[in-house]
Image 1 (tube, rainbow, N blue to C red):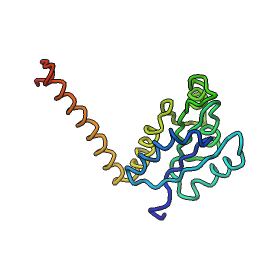
Image 2 (image 1 turned 180 degrees about the vertical axis):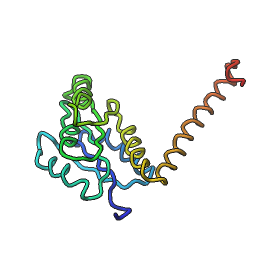
Image 3 (image 1 turned 90 degrees about the vertical axis):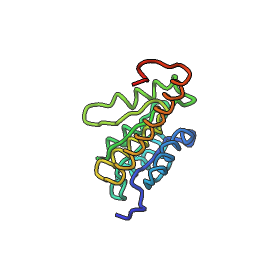
Image 4 (image 1 turned 30 degrees about the horizontal axis):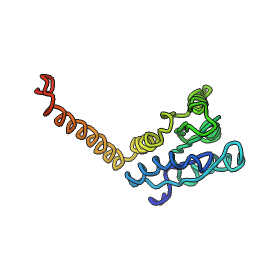
Amino acid sequence: MNTNSPRVGIIMGSDSDLNIMQEAAQILEQFSVPFELTIVSAHRTPERMMDYAREAAGRGIQVIIAGAGGAAHLPGMVASITTLPVIGVPIKSSNSIDGWDSVLSILQMPAGVPVATVALNGAKNAGLLAVQILGSADSAIAKQMAAYKQALGSAVLDKVKSVQEKWPNQFDEK
């Protein structure tokens, strides 16, 4: 496989989802994971959605991140067609019921059609989960993820020191 060919597909139901879904793209860029990003509506372009889901693996895609608001059928419908892992991102949209409709549409998949689901508007975590999935079979990506997590921990410890300077306590004196 060409190392520059997309390994992750990021799809969304509408361009109004882009402001959320671009966070997944930014994470993939940070880890130098090639991806593609496009609009695939389960309701308005069902044939496009079916073609995308059927053809993704053959084009080298290994994980699909699918974001949708409202009824949010896109992740589940794509998962019903492909054998690739699908990560669903529920999006709070203008026609949403505080995002709960999207969350439940993606979360409550029937047995046999799994969709990994992140938090409402959680595209950043979807990107990180895609990186972890790829890292399970790619040691270079796994090392990058380990360094990323180490940096997260270091940032917290720096904050502990800052708080400790102003409000010392015995726990942090260890």
